[in-house]
Amino acid sequence: MQILQIGLALFIGVHLLPMIAPVKAGLQAKLGLSGYKAVFSVISLAGFALIIWGMIVAPNVPVFEPPVWAKHLAFLLVPIALILLAAANMKGRIRAKLRHPMMLGIFIWAGMHFIANGDLASFWLFGSFFVYALVSLMAGFFGSSQVEFKVNPKHDFMAIIGGLVISLVFVFLHPVLFGVQLF
Image (cartoon, rainbow, N blue to C red; front, side, top):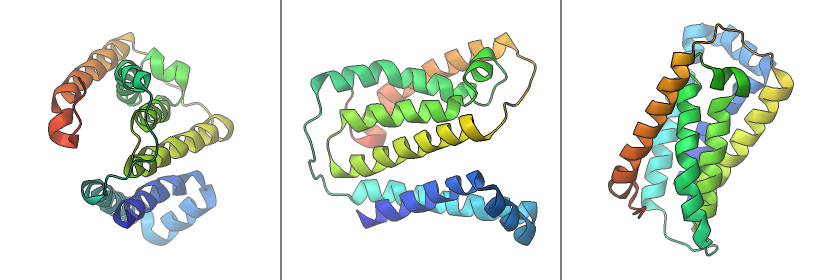
């Protein structure tokens, strides 16, 4: 479990740093913009690799019995989360109205997986991402100004189609990638 926890600390920790403007500015001043991005990327990648490895080697320790309805609700809401993740990098109405669709998508994805899984490794993985997304959403809504852009409705269509296609792919690859049959 320690490998998973170290990976989560690295990955989420480095993603929380930009929320602390003086720390981010200080690191960019010391490392330069390219150096900052390189260090950020290396730490993120190392954390991500440790998360994957940690989940693979984590023992199956039950914490709670997930409610039956949780898997059904996750099956319905995770595609919405994936649509929001796709919309985060597009200039559509979804992004304009929601301000932070990526964090909202992670919040929904992590929350649904947290409720639908009852083991300790899932508790750490999805619970950590749920709290990270919540903190990021609060910081984003209370601390930053909205980015202005010209809305392109075509981007909403692309985000919806893209999110649904990715959802469909994950339905079939979920057992292979994560060892969990969805239906």
